[in-house]
Image (tube, rainbow, N blue to C red; front, side, top):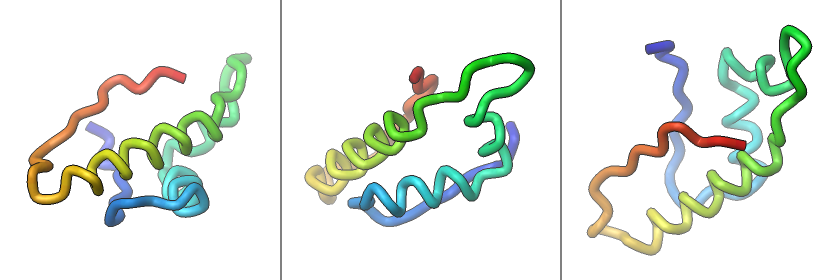
Length: 72
């Protein structure tokens, strides 16, 4: 819907996950908006790293994964 994506090969490092996340146009929302608390960016990075290792370990058996929504 927003056409705001970042892609990388698995597995991701925590630093790469963080930089990808912060490259998104919606990244400012992570810091909080309209009185809402900021989101736990480290938890999001942790999830991305763990998912990337899951995908990496599956190798050629991996076909597709949709994580929607990711709640933090």
